[in-house]
Image (cartoon, rainbow, N blue to C red; front, side, top):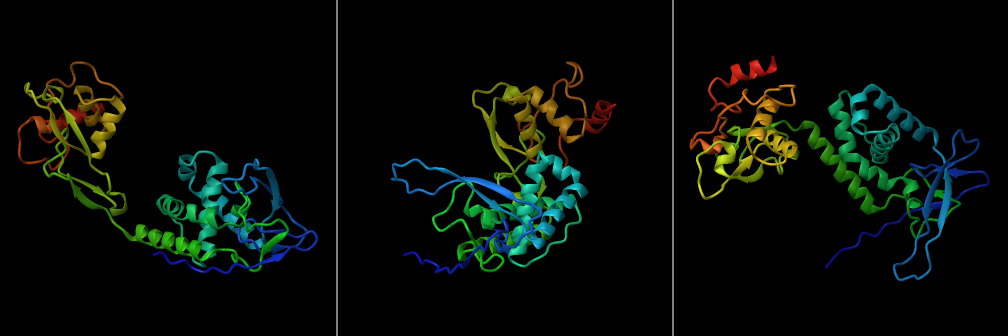
Length: 308
């Protein structure tokens, strides 16, 4: 048995020349410094044979939501590396502004002082923010209860109880992410990474799922003696990255793993630089490594030589 939450959302008709705020939904009287057109499709039930027809609705930003928009721009300017990771400026603005809209809707603030804090804000709040903006009623598909010529009776007055729940849940996730600290995580079966042999990997609890990747390889592919059965184990994130870059587990993947673990900038090695390399799982050792590739003699000196 499911329980439905009864939701009362209120709207009011727009006056002549008024527009609704694209974020909080409240009425904005003219003059309008900006006018934003949203294109979408009229809502239709699934069994309706009539084609959906496109429509355009014009919205604006109230003074407060314009300040939120400007803060989003300032944050992207202040943290260009986050902007670069999100791609285009328009995509970055959309994500950051929506995340700030989500905070505004629940009346909460969040200091942003680092690249990481901005990334966490976007990761946890953007989706909820996009869903509750007034513009979401019209684009990309106009919902059944959305009518042109109306606005929310008060800022965020259109948000449903289910959406409030999603906003609160997203904010709780953001708070948890901001206070969590890295913890050590071992392979699911114990032992070490099948290539570098490292025993534990540090990660935030929210990112620990799928940290270790299961893999198999022939013994000879990782430097061991021939055997009929394949070896099975887990790869740490760095060795998994090496496998993804090379495409298969073998000598080249082990070389790439060493370069990644020891921050060697070169992309390739000569045929004589790493000879006789053996993955940890093929050594027959029981004790995992405290540091990556510790089972290789003089690995630190070799890494220094490769960096040169």
